[in-house]
Image 1 (cartoon, rainbow, N blue to C red):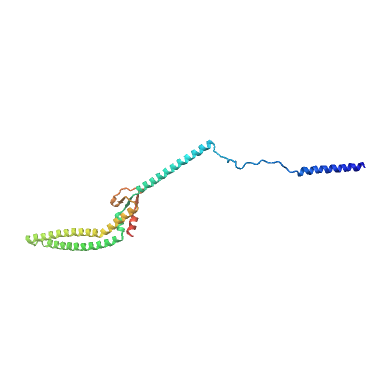
Image 2: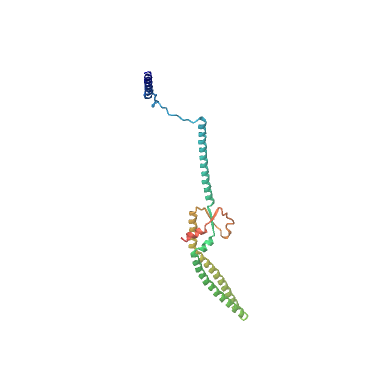
Length: 234
């Protein structure tokens, strides 16, 4: 009987212990957690320290100075280019060489050569005529009376003066004919030089014929011979 009673008490004690355990486990936690305010949140202000602000200001000042220096260098470069362009405003060419290289020059020279042949043939004829009469005079002067001798001498003298005058006149007419024939070519050449000078903004064009220019610095002078011939051929 005592054993049964002790067993029953042990069972009751065990059940009482389990009941306390279950209550402890299932009991709800009624502890409240305070909520953080949502409307009164102040944003974090990040400010540079005083030393950092001064460094930033100094950096902006340096950048401004560099920009000013770059602008000054660009202005100097532009001025330098302008000076180079001004120094390169002088050109040179051989006027006679360009004239002879013109296609029409050969035609003019052919015409002048034909005219020269005609004058030379006439001068040779009068010269031969004078020589013949002079030989006749020399052969017969011993037999001529003084009056005829003086007359023949005067005739020869007049003929000689006429031949000299004709020769001088022929040379003048040849030079005049060549000048007139070359006048259109010279005008065309001058127009071509003016055209090239305007295109290249030249101030001076120097003719190098007959040592007119003893020295021309190639760094500051350009040769426009090819340019002028190109304009003439257009």
